[in-house]
Image (cartoon, rainbow, N blue to C red):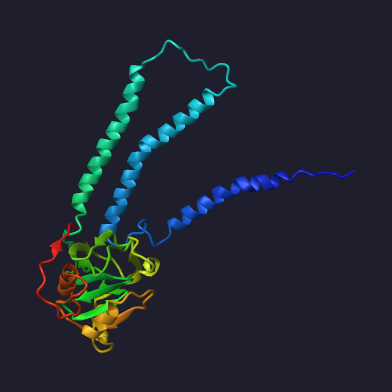
Length: 308
């Protein structure tokens, strides 16, 4: 006689425990030291506080609703003979007051917090620092980032070096499709759009390396459109500028024509010289259309100013 055996109960339990373990692992991984919960600048710190406050306000409603739902489901289960419902009750004013007043107050409070935060974290607002702001022009290509230092006369691809404690004033645009500039540990994701300029002020509190990327899908090479922000001391930044000026190619017409071609996973590169008006000319060419090729382009309408 053939004997049949049931699967061990242990395997069933492990299957039920698997998902909580996976969820907990994902949650722990998302809290790593590279995200918005590990700010390294005043803007990112203010945004984390806004995120925590907003979450706490919403949990004031979410947690009671979950607990009451579970309590009602348990009390009015089919096996509970003590639970009774009066068919004469059709309206209860106190219940209606609680049901509508708490969500209304939550929406008002949450809206007020976000409204105040949106003014305090205006991307164009200047940041107070130890020294004068550093200007950096940012251009998004398919699929790489160009950083132009107009005051230093140099440029870099997929590498942004900044002095710690110095406010950085960004002007951003795109030479192709819309992208999104985002350094989570410094804060304030902002869009880059062809023919338009957006502005952003950031500051890194201390030296370190922070991950940056495009937060807006832009085609095949989107996942590799990343860059590293290196926050260094003021002395190291000056030394880096001198090093870049003494080596590497110049970003002239021929180099720009090659740069404008779509490419993926481009390693960090520097240019020893760049036209100080390159950013404006990229804007003009984007407005005029793809037939305007070359850094020395002219006769184009004024670029539009986007919010931010």
